[in-house]
Image (cartoon, rainbow, N blue to C red; front, side, top):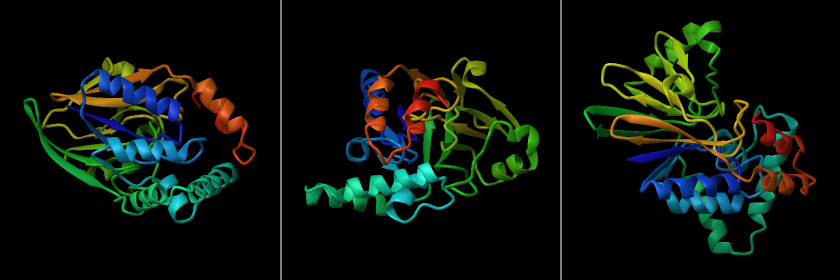
Amino acid sequence: MFAVLSDIHSNIEALTAVLADIEKRGIKKIYCLGDVIGYGPNPRECLDLIIERSEFCVLGNHDYAVFYEPTNFNYGAEQASFWTRDVMETDKDKLRSDKRWRFLGELSMRRTVEAQLGPTKATMDFVHASPRRPINEYIFPDDVYTNPVKVRTLFERITHICFVGHTHMPGVFLDEPDFYLPDELGDAYPIIEEEKAIINIGSVGQPRDKDNRTSYVYVEENKVHFVRLEYDFEKTMKKILAIDRLDNFHAERLRDGR
């Protein structure tokens, strides 16, 4: 049994709610799909928890932006990256600071795990964005209608299962192509050997599917379970609004899940 998290975006209230739920379920392994930082007010604390609790983490575009440079970001996201970098660079605990920078600098773009999941032998890829461009290619639900060739091309890049984040919108892509919301699946997708799937696990710290609850998945036997949890988003909002260099929109969107 393992959990998969993505797009925490420096939201410690959401992350601690998810970690508490994972612990309550007795789940020991956690894989992270990146964007631990960016947008939110607690980058140090979120990095520390992911370093401590995750088996591995892959590189997200906001992690890349803070460690290297933001590329193709809007003004608010770019400024949040610069603010995050400043916060991390001004930590007086040099050992802890070095550990965070080393963690970010060593993140790989892709991880692959082969495992027996109940009756199913699975090959699972873990990337932040897409199997073709692991850091920054968006796969939107509408792509199955507006750009089916793109979706089919993405499926050519995977062997079996690929877990992704990046759009902050949970659901399952199949190679017909088709897309299923968690609600349409009864909040669980059964992994079978004969079917490829790209599974978006949603966002821990900044949901964008008009549901403001934090989102993650866990895998038990061969079933991927989608989980939504209430958390104190108003506390996170207040912190963002109190920081001049963070755009107020990054706070307001937490209430609306957008």
